[in-house]
Length: 118
Image (cartoon, rainbow, N blue to C red):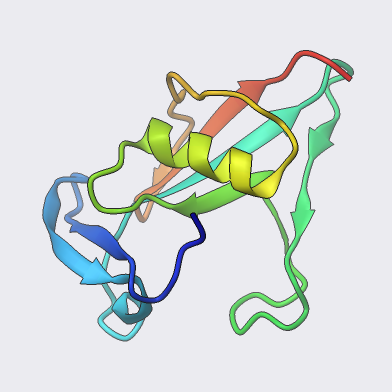
């Protein structure tokens, strides 16, 4: 599943409590607060996988970012969103069963997942 502008995401308050639903395409125009996941993936040598965003992106072109990031869709948990995005963005196949809260800034939750294998 690729996130499209018509997909729905939950809006949240400062306590990460759901306050409503909004179309993905409208979150920035409405300055809505919403949920996203960011994962930092490390291999067995503790090397961090980063991704560089496309230079054609409207926001943050060519910026470096977390290994995997994505919106938490309406009705999804953080774990479900993280698992979905790992499968969409990488060849890694894993199910994220719990996310370790590293920090929350404007409702961005960072998770750390250690991978086994090459």
